[in-house]
Image 1 (cartoon, rainbow, N blue to C red):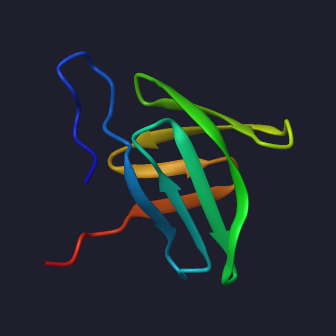
Image 2 (cartoon, one colour):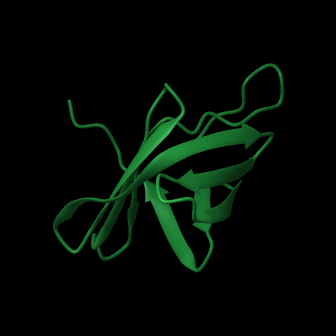
Length: 88
């Protein structure tokens, strides 16, 4: 589950996945994201910024999108993504 930093920003780094596993969005610590769709690796790539629990995305092609994390769930435009649990 996404935790909250001391400055009020939500920790977003990691892999986020739709319930059916078709879409996987990796949010990297360097402010970049890489999204796979239906097995197509790097279908969308770009950068993101976080303000509190709100994310702003800019795709490498210039397309923009937004997202919000509420109760540990990432609502990214029409998508609902869940943090993938790290396997030991």
